[in-house]
Image (cartoon, rainbow, N blue to C red; front, side, top):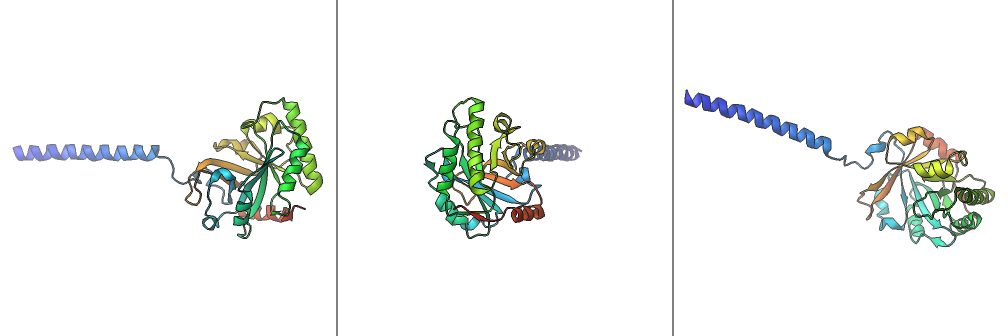
Length: 246
């Protein structure tokens, strides 16, 4: 009798232990972050990166599956990204659509910034319109009307020389502060780690992860997607044919 009671006692606590273990594992699984750096934008199949010297060393051979890469070339009226040429050479023969961007300074002349940008990328070929990065971060506080005026001068000069309206890269605050209503006719590349924001804004490109850990890149990387189907991406590239800056 005593042995039977002991057996039932052990069986009961054994079942309790199994239930507790299953519940703990389930909780851990819910709390564990998703290890796939692309998971937030998993609905979109056309994928890309944006790169500057801040990303460190790149193993270009390991990134052949990308559809597009946007490279930083310049900032303000005098700064060149020191790794632009290396990145460009690393990707130009891979069949990956290349884009290039300029970080816009709020405190310097817009036309001079455009001239500096075009001068640096002269002789290079790209597959999407030129890009301007417009954001308050790393910029001084300048009156909005001055920023808008300088940005208009930048846009006008780029369009005059290339026939293109530049793509605008920005975040939610930058959009509401400098882009909305003044530059809505430009294609938008939006930075947001929240899935809801692109649904509320008509952005073509979405930077959804600014802290991705990729084996091919020594420092954290920015991940992007084209917010359309693969067929729409092909149509986009047919509409925006490769061009060389002269």
